[in-house]
Length: 242
Image 1 (cartoon, one colour):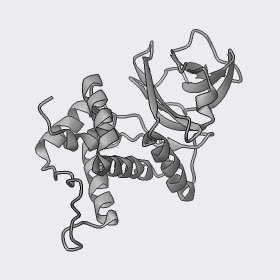
Image 2 (cartoon, one colour):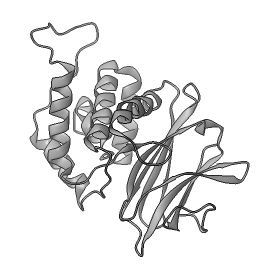
Image 3 (cartoon, rainbow, N blue to C red):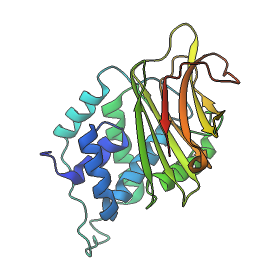
């Protein structure tokens, strides 16, 4: 990896790293408070940009994001034990505004949003949900699991027993056809329970699930809209958490 690892926060927040880069950056996050703060703010910014709406990411989003990163001047992370003076340290609002501009430029019309259990969030609820997601993703005991979807794409699951919650990140290659939708499931003792469904034409989601560490698996299915009461087999993916 030839890139300064501190510069990968934006790509990590957009899930635009390959497996090796992501693993290296997650190891780095354990020891770098500056990068943890920056990554959490970028994740929060991405959630607020969504404004309660869904859209599928455009084709080639990863290549576009990485190209933008290569063209954008990166500021070094703060060194441990050193603090910026008030004159040189940008305000949180300014940093979030800059992050928002970078995300919009890189992603264009494609947005991934943080959602509640019903996969809809009022504007005033978004900061609270984003803060909960951020708390899980930056927890000291966070554990990641990942599985490919049979229809293309991946589902990643982060769990934290300290937070008694987890985050499901769905990044499908394309939305289902024929009016069907993706649906998320938690599985406990072999019994599935719906964790929410996407809308028609949607293929990207970040879902907060309380109590997820007690589940044995997370499943993804394709269902007829509206959401199904029981999962249609075969599953698109099953992520074992044990």
